[in-house]
Length: 278
Ligand SMILES: [Fe+2]
Ligand SMILES: [Fe+2]
Image (cartoon, rainbow, N blue to C red; front, side, top):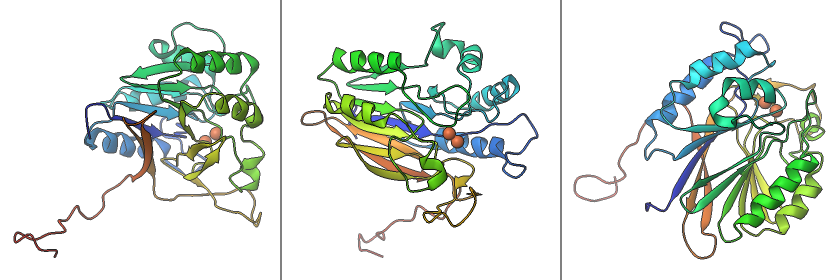
């Protein structure tokens, strides 16, 4: 790893409740976030930034965001966030004023980290589970991408712009994905589109760009590809995504690692003191 490498940790779908309350009466999302924060604090080398890709709160209420703020106070890394369908722009602005200044409208922003640009898009639609990039956001994105055509850019938004094959999630993904695809195809500097919302890892190609879904820290949407069950969740191993951008030819390259959260056996050496494979 060189000094030019950029490491972005992505966590998603925190669904923080008021203290003492469980999500769906079953999942302690606060404990899940505490575990994740400890894992991020321990990870070496330290990521440059943590992106929280939506569904920070659950209902949402101010009490949930205040709880979230206390939990995130333990995080030793800088973080940014975008809203999901469980969020409120206004409450996020009020609780994290340093992050969003006093701008009105969608919480879109660009962040420069050395040679890399991050573009955070607000795909939330007030009161609706699906996502949509409204006209001002699409115009803003076109302008943001056109501003620095020679710099690589990673896009983050909550709602995946593709079908994951899980019927009840596919009807609430990014509704105007075709408009995003047209825009992305005009800007070859986009190297990754990173999303959340489905609470489980997936990857595909979208508009010629590698596109990912980050798993949740708490509960996963059941992988029901045949519409066998009512919408359901399972508590599966939690993880975060680590997007590593490496400088190189053209726009460089990006790889996404899925990092499990928890205590696992190891690391153990492959080789003994004599240098031979054990
Ligand atoms: Fe979610
Ligand atoms: Fe969501």
